[in-house]
Amino acid sequence: MAGMTSHSALLACSDPCVAEAIRGEELRQRCGVELIPSENYTYPEVLAALGSVLTNKYAEGYPGRRYYGGQRFTDAIEELARERATRLFRCDHANVQPLSGSPMNQAVYLAFLAPGDTILGMDLSHGGHLTHGAPVSHMGRIFRFVRYKTDAAGRIDFDEVRAIARAERPRIVLCGYTSYPRDLDYAGFRRVADEVGAIAMADISHVGGLVAAGVLRNPFDYGFDVVTTTTHKTLRGPRGGIVLCAKRHAARIDQSVFPGLQGGPHMNAIAGTAIALGKASLPAFKDYAAQVLRNARALAEALLVRGAVLVTGGTDNHMMVLDTVATLGIDGRDAERTLDAVSITANKQVIPDDPKPPLRPSGLRLGTPAATTRGMREADMERLAAWILTALHDRDDAEAREALRKDVEAFCTRFPVPGLDAA
Image (cartoon, rainbow, N blue to C red; front, side, top):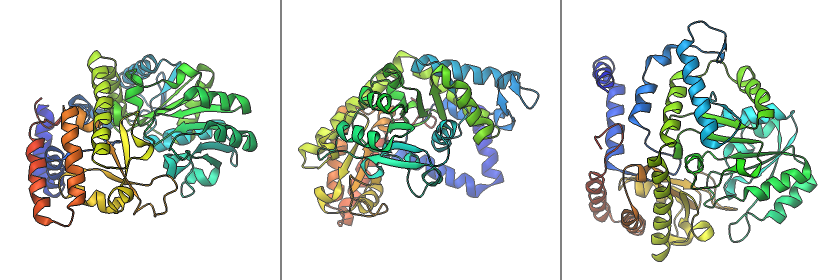
C-alpha cells in the first residue's frame, strides 16, 4: 500500500480540494456506522487494483479477441475473473465486463427482447429496483413492464404472479429486489416462467455474496437462464456487474454487452472483481456471510421488541425496512437526516403502496453487510437498535442528539475500517 500512500501525498499537493474531500470521507467512514444495505467496505487489495496502471489500458473485445494490442495481462485477468465467477456461482458462463448494475440488466433485456416486448418484474414500491421497469428509466420506455406486488403480509403471492404472467405473456420473468427483506422462492418463479415460455432471470445484486457463500439459495439450482449481480454490496468488490448464464445464452449475452451496449471495459475494476471473487471462495467469507444474516436477524429482533414496525415483520436476508410513519410518525427523509446527525447512515425507502413521494417516503432501509465487515456482532446490533430508536424519538433534543453522536463515534473506534485501518 506504499504506492497508494505516495499517491495520496501527491494528490494533497496537486489538488488539495479533492484531497480534503477524500480525507473527510475517510473520517466519516471511520467515525460512523454504515447501515445502508447496498454499501460495504471493499478489500484493501481491491483498492490497490482500482488505483493500478490497469486504468490506463483499453481492452475492447474479449480475451483472445481484442481490438487493441498489448493484452497479455488484461486477458489473463479477465479469464481469471470469469473462471472464478462460474465456479463460485455454479454456472456455465460469466460476462464480467458490465460497468455497473444498470447496464448489466439492460444488456440482458437487449439480448433477448425487441422494443415493446413484455417483462414481468417486481413493483418498485414493493421492493423492485429502478432497472426493473421504472417509468422514468429508459428501459421503462423501451420495453413494456408489468408488475407483481406483495400481499398484505408483505410476501410474494405466486397466484398473482402466475395470473399476471398468463394474462400478459412476458418474454422475461424477472425476480430480484432492492428492498425486499425475504429470500426468494426461485422454484416458484421458474414454474411461472416455464408455463408461459419465458426466460427466467434473477437479479441477485443485493445478495450476490450471500448466494456465493451458500447461505442463501442459488437461482441456478432451480434452472434459471440468466442471473445478474453487482460486484460490490455483499460481495465486497469494486463497483461493477456480472451477467451469469447457461451455456446456450453465452454468445447472445456477450454480444449484447460488447459491442451492443458498451465499449472498452474497465480493467482495473475487473481485476478488483477477480480479487473479490477469489476472497469469496475462502472459508472465511462463508463465515462472514453467515454473520451478516445473524446480525440482520439480531437487529430486526431488537427493533421489534422496542416497538418498531418492520415491513414483512422481519428479515431472511441482510436487510430490513423500518416503517417510520407507523413506528414514530415521521417520514423516511427525516429519519435518515436524524440518523446522519448521530453518525448512523441509513437511507429513506418507499414501502409497499407508499402514499408518500419517493423523496419523502414512509420507510427507512437498514442492512448489516458493512457493519459486519468491521467486526460487529449480535450484541452490537442490539445497541444499534436502541440508538436508532432513541435518536428518532428524541430527534428534536439537540443536547441528547450530540451526546448520542459522541457515543456512536466512540463505539466505532473499536472497529477498524478495511483499507483505512489495520485490522
